[in-house]
Length: 269
Image 1: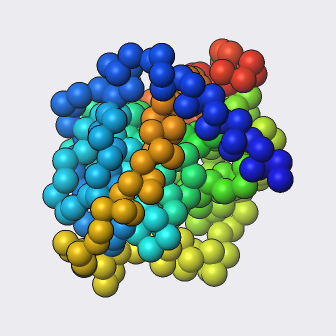
Image 2: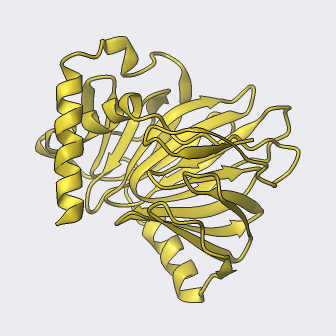
């Protein structure tokens, strides 16, 4: 009941904002981020106010949102060679991907993501994945991130990840370990990832057996997600995101604090 009331309130605020925010604030145009290299229908791609069913090879630019339905999954091949596998019932927004300067920022509104990021080598490089309760700062690694019922769970397969909550409390999660953040709580101490969890992480985002082009699907599925995707994009403008850039020089989260959209401090190296 609490979760449902929060969702209704959030969508009401976003709907009102859609009437007053100028279109240029909703999405940046033309900045290439990558392509949807593989998918299992149904997957919706939103660019600005346009929502359509995605096809393999579809271009992804800064500000685009990818949303999968109950059976849908998508693989996004970023321009720098990094890979984002989006699981079913998930919503992912590519805020920016500057391949030349190695600065990437994506937001997982809900659902599951498996990411394989290339190693960062340039000064000031960063690779961030944010959820409503946490931020994962990556140097160069493979990891799984889920957000559901106000809980963000991180499992690292390779490398290490700085895992921080909204107040800037961080832990470093190494390969083979898992940590979680519940709402505004500090991240849990990393524990070895159970084999069953590792298997589920792989299976839940795998696109093996999915059609490269996908079976023919109707437009109704695309329309069904339009409002929720629009709300997510507008929400990225209304609610300031958590920002914890991770420099390529190390994995320690040296955190200073700034105010978040909720009035609480967030981490900022």
